[in-house]
Amino acid sequence: MKDFREMKRRGEKITALTAYDYPTARLLDESGIDIILVGDSVGMVVLGYQDTTGVTLDEMLHHTRAAARGVKQALLVGDMPIHSYDTQEQAVETARKFVDAGAQAVKLEGGWSECGKIESIVASGIPVMAHIGMLPQHVREEGGYKLKGKTPRETEQLLDDARCVEHAGAFSVVLEIVVAEVAKQITDSIGAPTIGIGSGEHCDGQILVTHDLIGLFPWFTPKFVSPEARVAEEIRRAARAFIERTRGTADEVRDVSTSLDMTSE
Ligand code: KIV
Figure 1 (cartoon, helix red, strand yellow):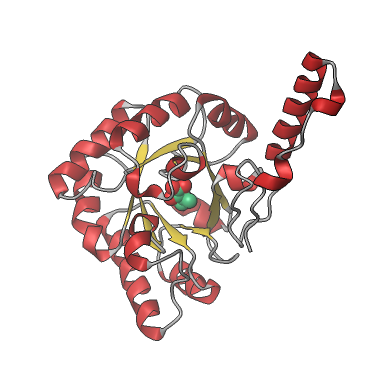
Figure 2 (cartoon, rainbow, N blue to C red; figure 1 turned 60 degrees about the vertical axis):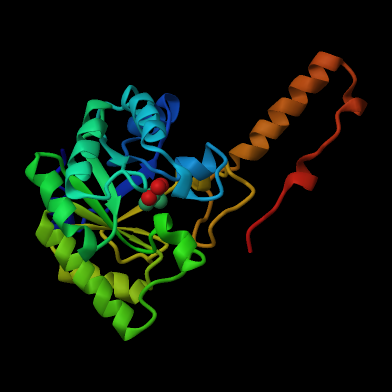
């Protein structure tokens, strides 16, 4: 495992992307990414769920095994799904299952309320990536993906969460959709690296859902993402070319892509 704290001290940015299958994990690994997360975002961008609250442990382990076969140099982190870490004992048991599936570390969502679990998992020898700010596993109670750190109270809570997860032994902390200035404050106040998503440029590293980065989930792209590719369009183009070639009648191929497109605001 790379020394991520040392990278933070040196001001070297940490890069992280998601992968849920062998080819993607292998391509990211070969590209030199530092961390590959088998995120529970798989539920939305691969399995077609509305959010991550329906993702099961079996699904996560299945995707972790696939991704693990493609990874040689990056740190592979398995995302513990909702209700797979309701108690300290269950948290350790689940973390071990991820390691058996090929992960070298696990991630879980939550701040001070999860610190006992983080401590127990770390004590069992498994590195933990914490995740604070917007918590997608709580999106239904929250009523949406809302920016965090907008009030002094929320800012204090986030700072407490960050200090607590660091104290519990987390080797890094994901900050999801946190006000950029607050993310900077958190980054400056802890030794563990912060990995931001939609939280501005001052974090020690950045993570994105790969499908968003490469434009493979065109029906919704978060506002903070600037896609680097348009893979969905390439798939449609290739499929249309194949249909045309096979039928031998270009006129019969109907372009349905425009009616399927739903772009985010
Ligand atoms: O599930 C996921 O992909 C994540 C990242 C976006 C941080 O939690």
